[in-house]
Amino acid sequence: MPAIIASPPAPDLWSGDPAQLLGAVLSMPWVSLILAAIIAVGIVASPRRRARQESGARLPATATGGIVARYAPEHRMLGISAIAVIAVFLAENLITGYALNLNGVVSWWRYAAPVFTASIGIGVLLVLIATRGSSRPERPALSSRRTWLTFSPRIGSLGAVTALLSLIATSVAAGMASSRIGDGPYVYLEIGVSNESIDPIRPWFYGWAYGIPVLICTAVLVAVTAAALHANAARAFLHPEIVIAEQRERRDIAKGVTRIVTSGALLALAGAWRFIAEAGTLTGLTIQSDGGSESYEVFWRYGEIAAIGGWLAPALEITAFVLLLLVTAQLGYGPLSDAPVESTADAEAAR
Image: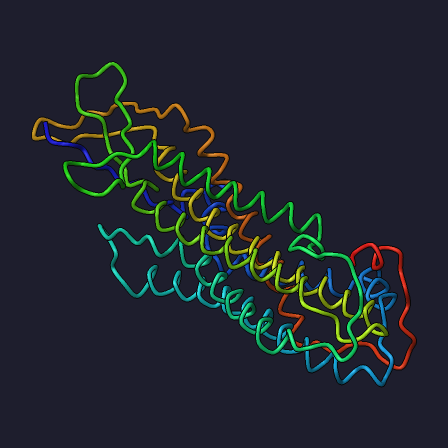
Protein backbone atom coordinates (compact mmCIF):
# COMPACT_ATOMS: atom_id res chain seq x y z
CA MET A 1 0.00 0.00 0.00
CA PRO A 2 1.40 3.43 -0.87
CA ALA A 3 2.30 5.84 1.90
CA ILE A 4 -0.68 7.73 3.28
CA ILE A 5 0.00 11.46 3.40
CA ALA A 6 -2.63 13.22 5.46
CA SER A 7 -3.32 16.90 5.98
CA PRO A 8 -4.84 18.23 9.21
CA PRO A 9 -8.48 19.17 8.70
CA ALA A 10 -9.22 22.87 8.37
CA PRO A 11 -11.02 24.29 11.42
CA ASP A 12 -14.74 24.60 10.97
CA LEU A 13 -15.63 28.08 12.22
CA TRP A 14 -19.34 27.30 12.00
CA SER A 15 -19.23 24.11 14.04
CA GLY A 16 -20.41 25.89 17.17
CA ASP A 17 -17.40 24.68 19.19
CA PRO A 18 -16.19 27.73 21.22
CA ALA A 19 -12.71 26.26 21.74
CA GLN A 20 -12.25 25.65 18.03
CA LEU A 21 -13.56 29.10 17.17
CA LEU A 22 -11.25 30.75 19.71
CA GLY A 23 -8.27 28.79 18.40
CA ALA A 24 -9.02 29.82 14.82
CA VAL A 25 -9.32 33.50 15.78
CA LEU A 26 -6.10 33.47 17.81
CA SER A 27 -4.24 31.84 14.92
CA MET A 28 -4.53 35.12 13.00
CA PRO A 29 -1.48 37.35 13.58
CA TRP A 30 -3.59 40.49 13.18
CA VAL A 31 -5.60 39.50 16.23
CA SER A 32 -2.42 38.93 18.23
CA LEU A 33 -1.07 42.32 17.14
CA ILE A 34 -4.27 44.13 18.18
CA LEU A 35 -4.25 42.46 21.60
CA ALA A 36 -0.56 43.24 21.98
CA ALA A 37 -1.13 46.90 21.08
CA ILE A 38 -3.77 47.20 23.82
CA ILE A 39 -1.39 45.66 26.37
CA ALA A 40 1.56 47.82 25.24
CA VAL A 41 -0.48 51.03 25.51
CA GLY A 42 -1.49 50.05 29.03
CA ILE A 43 2.14 49.44 29.99
CA VAL A 44 3.40 52.71 28.50
CA ALA A 45 0.59 54.75 30.07
CA SER A 46 0.93 53.21 33.53
CA PRO A 47 1.87 55.74 36.27
CA ARG A 48 4.52 53.39 37.64
CA ARG A 49 6.38 53.31 34.32
CA ARG A 50 6.25 57.09 33.97
CA ALA A 51 7.58 57.55 37.49
CA ARG A 52 10.44 55.14 36.80
CA GLN A 53 11.42 57.03 33.65
CA GLU A 54 11.33 60.43 35.34
CA SER A 55 13.46 59.22 38.24
CA GLY A 56 16.31 58.12 35.97
CA ALA A 57 19.60 59.87 35.28
CA ARG A 58 19.35 63.32 33.74
CA LEU A 59 21.83 65.21 31.62
CA PRO A 60 23.28 68.66 32.09
CA ALA A 61 22.26 70.94 29.24
CA THR A 62 25.88 71.28 28.09
CA ALA A 63 26.19 67.52 27.51
CA THR A 64 22.89 66.91 25.75
CA GLY A 65 24.29 67.47 22.27
CA GLY A 66 27.05 64.88 22.63
CA ILE A 67 24.70 62.27 24.05
CA VAL A 68 22.11 62.81 21.32
CA ALA A 69 24.71 62.62 18.55
CA ARG A 70 26.10 59.39 19.93
CA TYR A 71 23.01 57.45 20.96
CA ALA A 72 20.07 58.78 18.92
CA PRO A 73 20.93 56.74 15.76
CA GLU A 74 21.14 53.58 17.86
CA HIS A 75 17.79 54.14 19.57
CA ARG A 76 16.17 54.85 16.21
CA MET A 77 17.75 51.77 14.67
CA LEU A 78 16.24 49.65 17.43
CA GLY A 79 12.81 51.15 16.78
CA ILE A 80 13.16 50.56 13.03
CA SER A 81 14.29 46.97 13.64
CA ALA A 82 11.24 46.28 15.81
CA ILE A 83 8.93 47.68 13.14
CA ALA A 84 10.72 45.62 10.49
CA VAL A 85 10.23 42.37 12.44
CA ILE A 86 6.51 43.10 12.79
CA ALA A 87 6.09 44.18 9.15
CA VAL A 88 7.98 41.23 7.67
CA PHE A 89 6.12 38.76 9.87
CA LEU A 90 2.69 40.15 8.97
CA ALA A 91 3.53 40.57 5.27
CA GLU A 92 4.80 37.01 5.03
CA ASN A 93 1.65 35.63 6.68
CA LEU A 94 -0.58 37.74 4.43
CA ILE A 95 1.21 36.88 1.19
CA THR A 96 1.74 33.17 1.78
CA GLY A 97 -1.62 32.70 3.46
CA TYR A 98 -3.82 34.49 0.93
CA ALA A 99 -1.92 35.48 -2.22
CA LEU A 100 0.09 32.33 -2.96
CA ASN A 101 -0.74 28.66 -3.22
CA LEU A 102 2.07 26.91 -1.34
CA ASN A 103 0.46 23.49 -1.10
CA GLY A 104 3.30 20.99 -1.22
CA VAL A 105 6.00 23.69 -0.93
CA VAL A 106 8.46 23.54 1.97
CA SER A 107 8.00 27.15 3.09
CA TRP A 108 10.81 27.12 5.65
CA TRP A 109 11.18 30.91 5.49
CA ARG A 110 7.91 31.33 7.39
CA TYR A 111 9.68 30.23 10.57
CA ALA A 112 13.14 31.61 9.85
CA ALA A 113 11.96 35.10 8.82
CA PRO A 114 11.44 36.60 12.32
CA VAL A 115 14.85 35.39 13.51
CA PHE A 116 16.57 36.49 10.31
CA THR A 117 14.96 39.95 10.36
CA ALA A 118 15.96 40.43 13.99
CA SER A 119 19.56 39.46 13.21
CA ILE A 120 19.71 41.94 10.32
CA GLY A 121 18.43 44.76 12.52
CA ILE A 122 20.90 44.01 15.31
CA GLY A 123 23.68 43.63 12.76
CA VAL A 124 23.01 47.15 11.48
CA LEU A 125 22.99 48.36 15.08
CA LEU A 126 26.40 46.75 15.58
CA VAL A 127 27.74 48.66 12.58
CA LEU A 128 26.38 51.93 14.00
CA ILE A 129 28.01 51.29 17.37
CA ALA A 130 31.33 50.34 15.78
CA THR A 131 31.43 53.42 13.53
CA ARG A 132 29.46 56.39 14.86
CA GLY A 133 29.05 55.27 18.47
CA SER A 134 32.65 54.42 19.37
CA SER A 135 34.41 57.74 18.83
CA ARG A 136 37.53 58.71 20.76
CA PRO A 137 36.61 60.14 24.20
CA GLU A 138 37.22 63.82 24.91
CA ARG A 139 38.59 62.99 28.37
CA PRO A 140 38.84 59.28 29.16
CA ALA A 141 36.95 58.05 32.21
CA LEU A 142 38.62 55.24 34.16
CA SER A 143 36.40 52.22 34.73
CA SER A 144 36.63 48.47 35.21
CA ARG A 145 36.54 45.99 32.36
CA ARG A 146 33.11 45.69 30.75
CA THR A 147 31.65 42.72 28.84
CA TRP A 148 28.45 42.03 26.92
CA LEU A 149 26.73 41.23 30.23
CA THR A 150 27.61 44.53 31.92
CA PHE A 151 24.54 46.51 30.82
CA SER A 152 22.28 43.63 29.81
CA PRO A 153 19.08 43.45 31.91
CA ARG A 154 19.02 40.28 33.98
CA ILE A 155 15.35 39.45 33.41
CA GLY A 156 15.53 40.42 29.75
CA SER A 157 18.66 38.31 29.21
CA LEU A 158 17.05 35.34 30.96
CA GLY A 159 13.97 35.71 28.77
CA ALA A 160 16.05 35.90 25.59
CA VAL A 161 18.11 32.84 26.54
CA THR A 162 14.96 30.88 27.44
CA ALA A 163 13.27 31.77 24.15
CA LEU A 164 16.35 30.88 22.10
CA LEU A 165 16.92 27.58 23.91
CA SER A 166 13.23 26.68 23.52
CA LEU A 167 13.41 27.37 19.79
CA ILE A 168 16.59 25.32 19.43
CA ALA A 169 15.19 22.43 21.49
CA THR A 170 11.92 22.45 19.52
CA SER A 171 13.71 22.46 16.16
CA VAL A 172 16.04 19.64 17.16
CA ALA A 173 13.34 17.49 18.80
CA ALA A 174 10.91 17.96 15.92
CA GLY A 175 13.65 17.24 13.41
CA MET A 176 14.52 13.98 15.16
CA ALA A 177 10.84 13.02 15.17
CA SER A 178 10.38 13.79 11.47
CA SER A 179 10.69 11.42 8.54
CA ARG A 180 10.81 11.54 4.77
CA ILE A 181 9.62 9.52 1.82
CA GLY A 182 12.47 8.18 -0.30
CA ASP A 183 15.03 10.89 -0.89
CA GLY A 184 12.58 13.70 -0.17
CA PRO A 185 12.87 16.33 2.57
CA TYR A 186 12.18 15.63 6.24
CA VAL A 187 8.70 17.13 6.35
CA TYR A 188 6.54 14.25 7.60
CA LEU A 189 5.50 12.80 10.93
CA GLU A 190 4.83 9.07 10.97
CA ILE A 191 1.78 8.17 13.06
CA GLY A 192 0.94 4.50 13.25
CA VAL A 193 -2.62 3.19 13.00
CA SER A 194 -3.40 1.21 16.14
CA ASN A 195 -3.97 -2.56 15.77
CA GLU A 196 -4.01 -2.38 11.97
CA SER A 197 -1.60 -3.65 9.33
CA ILE A 198 -1.86 -0.58 7.09
CA ASP A 199 1.01 1.85 6.60
CA PRO A 200 1.32 4.77 9.03
CA ILE A 201 -0.10 8.10 8.00
CA ARG A 202 2.33 10.94 7.34
CA PRO A 203 1.00 14.44 7.99
CA TRP A 204 3.09 17.45 7.00
CA PHE A 205 5.35 18.34 9.94
CA TYR A 206 7.93 20.81 11.27
CA GLY A 207 10.88 18.57 10.41
CA TRP A 208 14.53 19.13 9.55
CA ALA A 209 13.58 20.87 6.30
CA TYR A 210 12.14 23.68 8.42
CA GLY A 211 14.28 23.36 11.53
CA ILE A 212 17.74 23.54 9.93
CA PRO A 213 17.19 27.01 8.36
CA VAL A 214 15.78 28.20 11.69
CA LEU A 215 18.82 26.85 13.56
CA ILE A 216 21.20 28.55 11.12
CA CYS A 217 19.41 31.89 11.51
CA THR A 218 19.38 31.43 15.29
CA ALA A 219 23.15 30.90 15.32
CA VAL A 220 23.60 34.11 13.32
CA LEU A 221 21.28 35.98 15.69
CA VAL A 222 23.20 34.80 18.76
CA ALA A 223 26.52 35.84 17.21
CA VAL A 224 25.47 39.36 16.19
CA THR A 225 23.66 39.88 19.50
CA ALA A 226 26.72 38.97 21.58
CA ALA A 227 28.89 41.21 19.38
CA ALA A 228 26.44 44.14 19.61
CA LEU A 229 26.09 43.89 23.39
CA HIS A 230 29.86 43.66 23.82
CA ALA A 231 30.50 46.65 21.53
CA ASN A 232 27.81 48.63 23.34
CA ALA A 233 29.41 47.97 26.73
CA ALA A 234 33.14 48.06 25.91
CA ARG A 235 33.37 51.42 24.09
CA ALA A 236 34.87 54.33 26.01
CA PHE A 237 32.76 56.98 27.75
CA LEU A 238 32.93 60.51 26.36
CA HIS A 239 34.08 62.17 29.60
CA PRO A 240 33.73 61.59 33.36
CA GLU A 241 30.92 64.08 33.99
CA ILE A 242 28.34 62.12 32.01
CA VAL A 243 29.37 58.53 32.79
CA ILE A 244 26.17 57.89 34.75
CA ALA A 245 24.04 59.22 31.90
CA GLU A 246 25.91 57.13 29.33
CA GLN A 247 25.47 54.05 31.46
CA ARG A 248 21.72 54.58 31.37
CA GLU A 249 21.77 54.97 27.60
CA ARG A 250 23.71 51.74 27.23
CA ARG A 251 21.28 49.90 29.49
CA ASP A 252 18.41 51.13 27.30
CA ILE A 253 20.26 49.96 24.18
CA ALA A 254 20.92 46.54 25.71
CA LYS A 255 17.29 46.27 26.82
CA GLY A 256 16.08 47.00 23.29
CA VAL A 257 18.44 44.40 21.84
CA THR A 258 17.31 41.65 24.22
CA ARG A 259 13.66 42.46 23.54
CA ILE A 260 14.14 42.16 19.77
CA VAL A 261 16.04 38.89 20.19
CA THR A 262 13.33 37.48 22.46
CA SER A 263 10.57 38.59 20.10
CA GLY A 264 12.17 37.08 16.99
CA ALA A 265 12.64 33.76 18.78
CA LEU A 266 9.09 33.78 20.20
CA LEU A 267 7.48 34.46 16.82
CA ALA A 268 9.39 31.59 15.24
CA LEU A 269 8.63 29.35 18.22
CA ALA A 270 4.92 30.16 18.10
CA GLY A 271 4.77 29.19 14.43
CA ALA A 272 6.67 25.97 15.07
CA TRP A 273 4.44 24.96 18.00
CA ARG A 274 1.30 25.69 15.99
CA PHE A 275 2.61 23.62 13.07
CA ILE A 276 3.54 20.72 15.34
CA ALA A 277 0.11 20.81 17.00
CA GLU A 278 -1.69 20.68 13.66
CA ALA A 279 0.14 17.50 12.72
CA GLY A 280 0.51 15.83 16.10
CA THR A 281 -3.11 16.07 17.25
CA LEU A 282 -4.66 14.03 14.44
CA THR A 283 -6.96 11.41 15.95
CA GLY A 284 -8.61 9.69 13.03
CA LEU A 285 -8.17 8.51 9.45
CA THR A 286 -10.89 7.68 6.96
CA ILE A 287 -10.11 5.69 3.79
CA GLN A 288 -12.67 5.89 0.99
CA SER A 289 -13.15 2.95 -1.39
CA ASP A 290 -15.74 1.67 -3.85
CA GLY A 291 -17.24 -0.49 -1.16
CA GLY A 292 -17.66 2.38 1.29
CA SER A 293 -15.32 3.91 3.83
CA GLU A 294 -13.36 2.71 6.81
CA SER A 295 -12.32 4.81 9.80
CA TYR A 296 -9.25 4.20 11.95
CA GLU A 297 -7.99 5.73 15.17
CA VAL A 298 -4.49 7.20 15.17
CA PHE A 299 -2.45 8.45 18.08
CA TRP A 300 0.95 10.15 18.43
CA ARG A 301 2.50 9.59 21.86
CA TYR A 302 3.45 13.27 22.12
CA GLY A 303 0.09 14.48 20.87
CA GLU A 304 -0.98 15.93 24.23
CA ILE A 305 2.22 17.94 24.50
CA ALA A 306 1.74 19.15 20.93
CA ALA A 307 -1.80 20.26 21.76
CA ILE A 308 -0.56 22.28 24.74
CA GLY A 309 2.04 23.93 22.53
CA GLY A 310 -0.63 24.83 20.00
CA TRP A 311 -2.70 26.59 22.64
CA LEU A 312 0.35 28.42 24.03
CA ALA A 313 1.43 29.64 20.57
CA PRO A 314 -0.89 32.71 20.53
CA ALA A 315 0.41 33.75 23.97
CA LEU A 316 3.99 33.63 22.66
CA GLU A 317 2.96 35.66 19.62
CA ILE A 318 1.22 38.32 21.72
CA THR A 319 4.21 38.55 24.08
CA ALA A 320 6.55 39.04 21.12
CA PHE A 321 4.40 41.82 19.67
CA VAL A 322 4.18 43.58 23.05
CA LEU A 323 7.98 43.60 23.38
CA LEU A 324 8.42 44.86 19.81
CA LEU A 325 5.87 47.64 20.30
CA LEU A 326 7.67 48.74 23.45
CA VAL A 327 10.94 48.91 21.50
CA THR A 328 9.33 51.10 18.82
CA ALA A 329 8.99 53.80 21.51
CA GLN A 330 12.74 54.33 21.17
CA LEU A 331 12.06 56.07 17.86
CA GLY A 332 11.03 59.06 19.97
CA TYR A 333 14.37 59.11 21.81
CA GLY A 334 15.12 62.35 23.64
CA PRO A 335 17.37 62.56 26.70
CA LEU A 336 16.21 64.41 29.79
CA SER A 337 18.11 67.66 30.38
CA ASP A 338 18.38 70.82 32.48
CA ALA A 339 19.02 68.87 35.67
CA PRO A 340 22.17 67.59 37.39
CA VAL A 341 23.32 64.06 36.77
CA GLU A 342 22.17 61.82 39.61
CA SER A 343 24.55 59.14 40.83
CA THR A 344 23.07 55.78 41.75
CA ALA A 345 24.63 52.75 43.40
CA ASP A 346 23.63 50.36 40.64
CA ALA A 347 25.06 52.70 38.01
CA GLU A 348 28.40 52.76 39.78
CA ALA A 349 28.35 48.97 40.02
CA ALA A 350 27.73 48.71 36.28
CA ARG A 351 31.06 50.36 35.39
